[in-house]
Image (cartoon, rainbow, N blue to C red; front, side, top):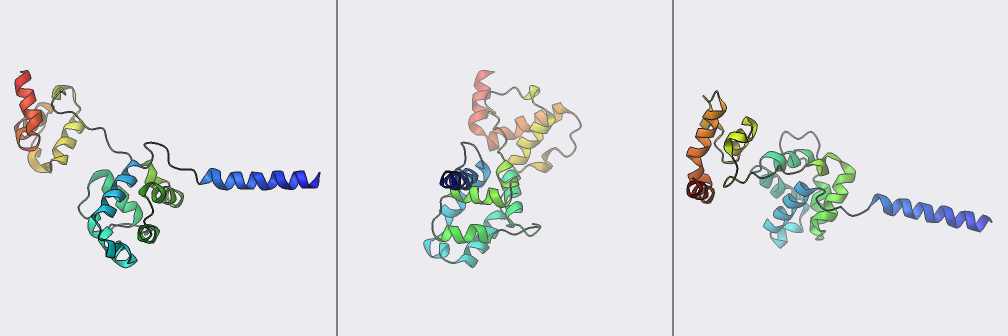
Length: 183
């Protein structure tokens, strides 16, 4: 009887250990995985072996990111304004070629917010009716193009639509061509 209880307790403990370290599900930690994949692919092999160099390169890499990716860098300590710093949890595993999915799973245990980040839905500029978009979405389109100041004096939705249509040939030429052929 004692042996059965002891073996049951041991099996329960093993199950609990492995249940907590389950692999990421599809779509989980998408920002983390994509940013770390891009970052690791940009590194030379000799840099990957040095933790300090990896951390410095990650900080430099984070300087050029925007939106959700910038928020990810904030969470891990890759920005000067970051409140926390868990770069060591990234730099060391990169040295021994840990996959991004596994690394993000470990980061999730340290800070759950990291895996809550999701990319915004992409707007298909070729087929979307701009008049049906919210002003927030029109502003986001301009922001993604780096044209935050292009519509400073805009007061109405129609003003934002006009600016997006004017800038579309410059930033999304294929979408602009498709829109012209449909009219």
